Length: 138
Image (spheres, rainbow, N blue to C red):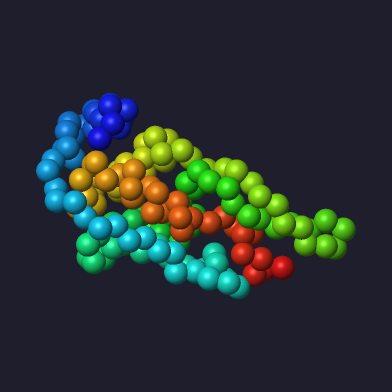
């Protein structure tokens, strides 16, 4: 694990009053993340996280379980201009460090070694979406 991630975890643990609670040895887990929404209702889905086949989706708080995760990447989005639908690429979302800081309260509850947090972020990022990105509401 990089020094930056170790420093971030130490800061987050101090801020959350559980010093080094999540710095523990946990066997490596295979991470599978999926978003169940699809065209024409991409926004009507839910996040699913499987760690070595075990469904741990219930750990994701309800207020974000049915929403975009706001990871940093290029998203495709549409809007209307003069009665025509126009598609564009927008770069938005939180980079890993900021995303982990914002989501640490639930991420630390996953039965996942902290060395795999970046892998979790990347798996979520591959499935992440924003409103207006599938064109179903055109």
